[in-house]
Length: 512
Image (cartoon, rainbow, N blue to C red; front, top):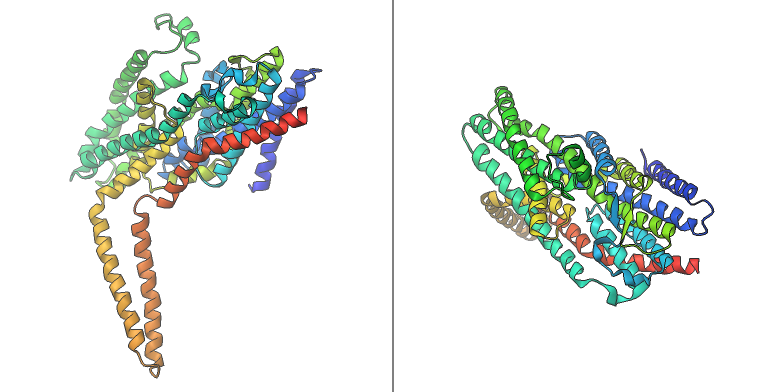
């Protein structure tokens, strides 16, 4: 499917969302603004699908556990399901408290212009980041959008610097924590299984424990992040559950512990049966992690759909609420049609444009196999759990990509002896190149045949040196990708804010 067809299909989805919004407003004189916000919201949702979802399935694809087609199908189904089943029914209209409600002077139309500008600015930034192959935080994108529009509406004094400080902190905390946990689990696998002489026996003991830990982590994660919006409904049906507003960490941990124990007794005999047909090498043992990776991709997608759909539909719901009640509210109900725009928009964006970023996360930062991908996806779940309980500001995008970095740098560190050997090899090859250059200088012009032979040897030697230099420079993590991604993280908020402010003034000018 070429890019023109993809763009047309995406545009048709956005137009359909706008058309439906138009039918809802009837003769409302401000109905045009809901149509505009629906258009921008659909565009934003598709860009979330194109960029953010790659973190949930990229490692599984890069490792070979899933094909891109399989990953797109699974992620699309579970993203949409998470959005529609467990998505929030109420959302904070001013994302993350980045600006004070007073910024809009209690003027609902100024608020509508600001939220619309925030949506479009965040979507445009995500679109650019996807084109540049840079996975960025959609939450930070919309925060930047709201920040820019808020400053444009009420001045710089309305900024919540405490919130901004947390966002800056997340640039460091998220990738470092995710990378450390992923590296830890990969190191465990390497030392307890891969480095053992009898890898089969080691795998029979260790793999069921690791997969059970993953099951416990994901059940805890889904309980905390995927069920919080439907917890009241669950407690009404299952009266033995604590009647709290959302699941507590203790309840989630108990669910996870029970799930992990049950998983262990289910998985252990299956692993024992499967390893009987495997050879005593890493390549074969990787197959033990394929099914857990598929489940992880599905569960991460469900939790992402339940939580991050608000990035697309939150401002849209806020616009709908402001136009309906003609006031600026701190909280707004999310109608089903708005949630559908978010859920299906993410699925559409993933299907049409997601493979680009899936490839980047899965194979263009560092080389992944199933064991490494398992460590990354397990780290993603555990990091979110730890951070949420400690109140640390984290980004799921930064965690997942940081985990990929962590795995790559661990491989590099463990193979440091080989790197030293490559440095020695490079030195030797550079000396050979110098010798050839000296020989060319000393070769008399009359001996054309020998000179030509030396020039050919020089060219061949340059290729050898270049190849070794590239291997050393890239090591196990592509430095160019790391620099590009980190730079994109840093400029996400200011870039989205600047674009949002411009769009706000344009919309306000047109509406005047």
